[in-house]
Image (tube, rainbow over all chains, first blue to last red; front, side, top):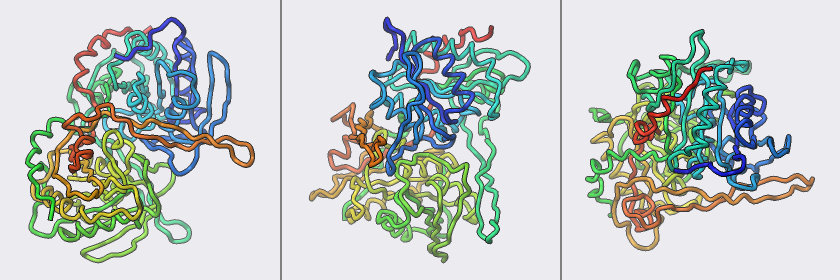
Length: 266
Length: 266
């Protein structure tokens, strides 16, 4: 287990992929400041859909927006993963006890985790052996109502600060949108098998050139299957999915041994 | 199993993240054309490190470079994953029997798979239920020697065309650089636990502004451990890792059940 326990206030790094001005980032920062000293790093604009992208061909620049013991805020021209790398390796004086990402405006359940800048930041933290949690609210609205998030998010952050997380693991936590009835509870889940059905919208510009806008709707291959994140969210539970960065399909390694007999030399 | 078997020549979609002019793309296209009709989609410049990023805020544009039955080539202003989505949903008349990505100039072993545009394209294919393979050569040189790749790559593509791949699985195949002795064979492996130790290079521009270049070196947490991709490559074997897009850490779901008792309402 990696644990953030020690005697001084923990150091919590907070990031997101909706940009520095996002309401969800402010909410998460506010909650984190009740539990530790906070460093925020985010970007001028939204980095949604940036996934685990890193910036290789252009240099990174950082602006310090605010610097006090309780709260330091950095503005970065890069991706969420750049932000984690730069903060951990350059900006922070010590390794953070916890990295939080979010609260994202919009769901990151099912296979969305793989496109998400929010979750990429948390996964990058776990690769670097730092406990991390990504939070998402099922509401894309820039002015989404986060009022029901404070209590559960604080409870869950406290749990991770106290107990740590298993090695190389981060959590993907999605919270239902307020719908009039209180959240029923928390479900520890697996990622549902689903994907985005793309419906590109083809348009023609005033000069006669064609272009395409990416749109799409989520298709759940396991609709109604209990134990999945989508099931939990559809039933008004918070979903907690433990995530690891190892993409190996272990169950197939032995099954594929006959590949080792392929003739590969002339 | 998903299988590309049918009576006509299979349709093979080929992409990469090094751009349309990359030598590795030309080699892979050449090999694929021996086995089927080929559609290539790539980008003007390198998209290395773009991971699973998708383009949401700007429209996509496509230019047809070449169009015949055996070979069609498209140029896209987007990411590798955009290319898969657009080809499958808009450009192709039928679902491809196989999607190939690469041959990447440089390794995509270990956790590099998560940053890689090459592998993101293959993973996107697997999410869409299309058999896919990402190939990488352990040589970053733009003029890398691919001469030893032809035989094994053709053998492996033929294997997948004949037998298909298990559902929602793609393969991450890395090939050692030519080093004077022939490749020893193929090993079916798991992804090694390793990460990139970042060493940002801080510089100051002529106007006094600081900026950072991302550099780094790979650190293997399991150096010398047999059964890992890095071990295979270091011992002059081709590594084949079966990859799935489900990031759930299944072994922790039951262990975390006590999270379901968290008090989350006021």
